[in-house]
Length: 452
Image 1 (cartoon, rainbow, N blue to C red):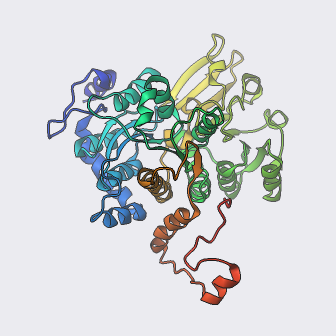
Image 2 (image 1 turned 90 degrees about the horizontal axis):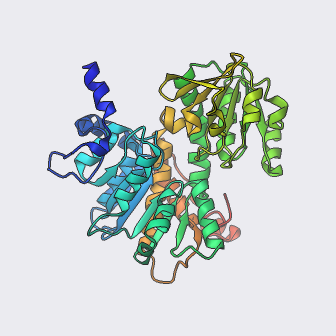
């Protein structure tokens, strides 16, 4: 049995002929036999994703995505599977690749391939070459052309621009959910190269506050515990960046009794960190004494070789930002340093004098590479994405120009309201007099468009 598992791991999914029980082979995953296991995981996720299930119920009559051909590049987990199957229930055809080489749940990819609602090309532990091959297989297919893009990180959008720019003639819009991907879109827009409307769901309130802050507040501890069994009480931790992700990480670590330092470039976020009771420092001031370093800036080269050289023995280094650019991992691949694989996603990097650091997920996204994230929070993000796709797909000609748009506040509020029944929460309604006094419609939107 052990040798069977081992040999299965040695064979690249690209070299295998795979078919599901219906004889369809338009997918590439690790092992179709895991489909039943994956299906049970998806069913558990459905319990915690009430808004998507509500959208499905409402779509039984009308299919707002009928005719939509969506190509997606996100993490492939039980939670995103619920999104894909919801989009399918709303009338869309889906082809999907992974936006991170470590975050695919193989059994979930198998369940999707078996169910047939989405053609999936992804497995955990892809090489860089596999990563782009999978994206290409989603996009470059005979007799099928995407008319919508759902992207997390901008790699899919980048690939289509690079390889198949003519496809944008048929594409009605892009929905992007990460800081990195949104940054790329704004760059394209500024350069006058964005040729379709794009929806920035990363900066919607539901994404920023819920996915980034509350999700990371729970999953940072989970990722560190599963990989290192570290005890947090009394540990000195430096968190680089005090955006929503940084705020979530700091809140969790502080609650566990860690001593938390924060680095920041933005005086507003820096002041927030100070008011929340954290010491604001430069990385160089604390690098010799901290036990854990966590990056969450969305930037590059935040932790460089010079910092890594000065860390103390046993320091844990990890990244909670979307991209693997924050920690300069490439600078550690030099002859004088020894890499020792401890277990999956955990490496010791050893200096000539015997000092070692513990590097998690090779500097990639910790929570999705090494643990899982709370389903309920992802329900909020996924519902936001689904509504953004519906909005862009059905928008009349001219409503959206070739630019980057924020999700309308009315939609943000709708997503939030769909999740309130879970808590048996009862909203207060404004009286006519109160609504008039505030200058609001009784049914919202209650916040101005610039609110975040």
